Image (cartoon, rainbow, N blue to C red; front, side, top):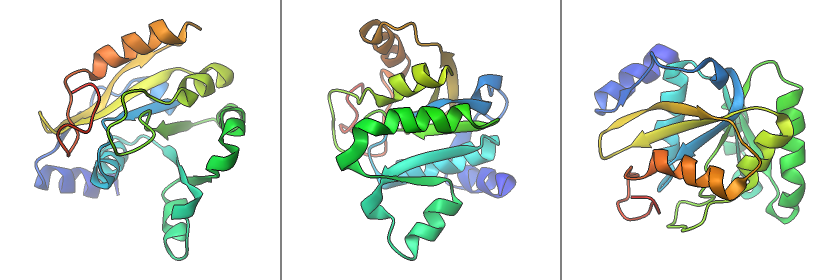
Length: 182
């Protein structure tokens, strides 16, 4: 699948950095931004597959209906009940701690619509699991994707978020104007 995804991405004009993959990507919270459409997720997931990064991802449980649920689970999907989302960071941190190799893929925007403030869960999951945050991206402005760096949480969320946002500033998702850092 890795080579097939790489070839498909090249076919649609997306260049993926398969060389500069940090070793921390084997066990981390992997941010993915911008996320402005379902195709951002699909193409981004293909890019991570082409890079050889083993990921799991969370989606609202309402999307896990038959037969789609079987496909999503096979791709690494984990349903989340948004009514009990407060418990999810601790559950996700345990999942990471108990795995030898896992990159928990999270869109910090929490939605495909324009959202001026990111969800904080990714940060607290990384802290509880004692793993770094890797910065995955798919920038339609430059038609490139990859993992742009590694960030270690310091415990100062506001300051750390500003540093993380610096990396994503100026990138664009498929739908222009839907990413808060464009």
